[in-house]
Length: 236
Image (spheres, rainbow, N blue to C red):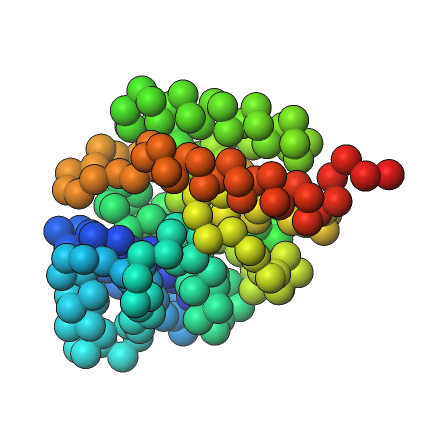
């Protein structure tokens, strides 16, 4: 593929002190390769470990790196919203900061973006614990019943957008895990074109996952019902 003119990359981080430096340093040469102008935004969602200090250290030595920090842990959705708000370039890609994706596969997303408003990943083989697989399948059913859409991997943390597409679906409301459902539901309402791309998924080496936490699940259900109401589903 030929270089695109500009690309904003952001990673949401929460207590990823053992992952952040490796994730960002691997992304830098990829961003240089695929875009003439680029930035990497490190979103720290109120980490209680050294994630923020490491991000600040990285930003000091590279002018293309920026840090956004939440004073307290607000949730995955809040981290994504901060990344979207900070991103300044025509194309915006986010990638989870846990090291479970190969960011170099962004080139496969960029190959498709000319024909779409959004390109979203789906994991070829999801390497999570069985409970998270169950939650994913339940989410697919939930979103089909409440919002009328089906995608192969709704909460895959690897997605690319045109900046105009983000503007069309904003403002986003979800602060927690239901943010990915909100993005897709609002995109469906706006009749945006979405293409799905297969990506590799790797085991988490460091840190803990929070997606299976009961409080996260309860919050996601509440946010989903509010979204359903706000988007006027079920009304004539």
